[in-house]
Amino acid sequence: MNVPAARAPGRVPTLVTAVATEQDVFALRRRAKTVAEAAGLDNRDQVRLATALSELGRDLLRSSAPMTASFDVLREPPALKASLRWHDDRVPSSESLAAVTRLLPQTECAPAAVGSAAEAAGVRGGRIDITCPLPHLSVGEHAAARVRALVEAEAPASAIDDLRAQSRDLIAALEESHAQRDELERLNEELTETNAGVMALYAELTVEHKDVVERFSQEHELALALQRTFLPAALPESPGVELAVRYLPAVTTAEIGGDFYEAVNTPHGLLLAVGDVVGHSLQAALVMGQLRHALRAYAAQGHPPHVLLEHLDHLLGLHQPGWTTSVCIVLIEPGNARMHVANAGHLPPLLLPPVGAPRFLREHGPILGIGLPHPPATGHPIEPGSRLVLVTDGLVETRRSDLFERLDLLAASAAAGPHEPEALCTQLVDTFAAEPDDDIIVFTARLHPSPAS
Image (tube, rainbow, N blue to C red):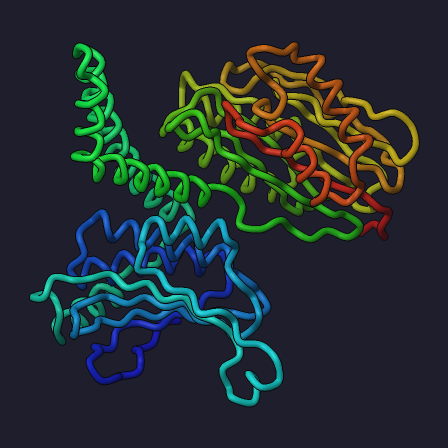
């Protein structure tokens, strides 16, 4: 719900909105762009502000304790100020805060006030303020009027509308990032063609074009922040199941990839999935986002795992011809005593029983995007306390190692590793992902018996 902000000296009241769900984060992103546009920010700064608030909103989201987001147009000096406030002891992650600060250096984070003294003073909680300078002529009562008019005219948006809006922003960010990269490559080619004075000339041009280098870095950071919005904001809760996940983008390429994961409660149990769209590009990321949202929609209808793969294969061939992707789906029945595996060309999941040797569940079907039929899912019993590990190929594939040897090493490392999923994710990443050439996802689960629904 949106309400006018309280009037304060030197400020024009604009908008206050509550943030309690993932859908509220999507709405906050739209409204941030609306307010920024009405206040006079250019398109690039509109996207930066919207992305920063989306990143922080997802990171700080707690369904039991909503946040408040507000926007104020300051007159002296002219600026648009966006604020996130909460009333408990949560704090933003260092990764999210660092990413937002690189995009918008004017970001300020007030530490959370906790304890009885804070409660007595009525200041429990924390806040983050982001201040964006404005052209002087854009400030005034007419700016607030433009904001109110645009917000009131805003039509309700669906999940696919939000996905398309993020895709457009991602396209714009990547196009600008690629243009800056191409300019840098052209300059470097000219420098390498020179004679013995090339190093001195290169140093001179590097200083002269420092702003180009910094801007490319900022735009790439923006693209990665936008890509994270395609992935789940949080993992679901399921009786007797502990989940943990790690996503690491490649460090040796400026492109973004198509690795994705999903976890969702369905009418027939908890569904876990890991996939990898073939290729590294903006389009690969967009295909990934479409497949992940489609998987959630189909899973909610209660289809078995191999039927989900058939639906995704049909969708890919219909709307993204020429693209292929691997996907592994695991459906854990209520009670956590049995699971079903359907695999479309992906690395096999690793099952680690509490006693005995680990084993890969090597059921396999064709990769998605080529229109071939998929075999039915295969059932497996689950011993109490078993662990499950799903990964993408960036964790184990290297140019200098045999894949099967790396998989054996992964199984041995996981078997000897900690039983707690978060700690196991950390160990596998530390062991295998020092300088990843490809995106990496590590998805772990520990399964205990629970009453069947």
